[in-house]
Length: 290
Image (cartoon, rainbow, N blue to C red; front, side, top):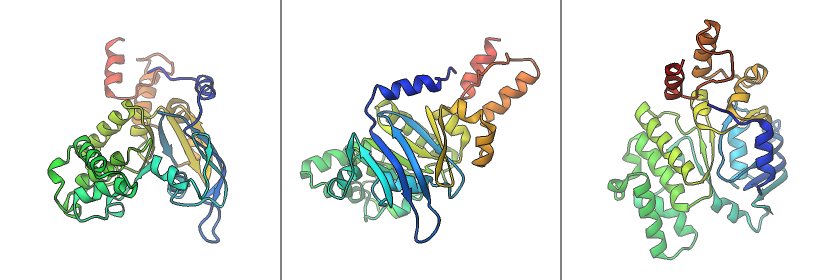
């Protein structure tokens, strides 16, 4: 339940070369106001980051810019210290994968096998390497039995597995999930969280946009909050969710564990300290030691 201080996080960042760095990133659709309005961020290797904010805050636009799908109107993007331009844009796209909210927007092939092999084939890899990656991705997502089936006839949770397998097969270093739990039932949401935990243990850099503050609090090591195309908070989950002004500006609420702990503090049952548990098991352990 211990939370790193902002100073400790800054020290760790100073010791590493960021995987991704953006400077004064700006983007707007047509003649509308900027969807991104001067974003400066550094993403470190192996971080587990939750990206929060209300609808239209700029989260998805930010993802599509750092993935190379959209081209910023101004600003700079660096991947492992190398400035991204037209010549090396494919290098960014290869190493920064994105799993879209709606799997139907990502799936294009007639079979699961063809779908998962599409990305590696576009990298012009040898056939043997493509097959190795596809088998690995299907095993990883436990969907070998679907390999010859049309993906559009799968359930929503099964389609989500296929869309994640797409990115696994690309062996992307940074993986972005845009609202991954949207429209998933509890069982498939739990499956997704298990996959994220596994990917995190493997050292992948993960960025996830979500409206689920309970998930963000228990899963993330770092929380970035967007509002009106700008980053208004970038800190540990504990420190972000303690800032009432940030929560109000971004239309966020406290995680359930915050609410429970604050009630217990008011009743004098737990100490008046920042020992907020992140999940039910931590809460159980805390109560058992009182």
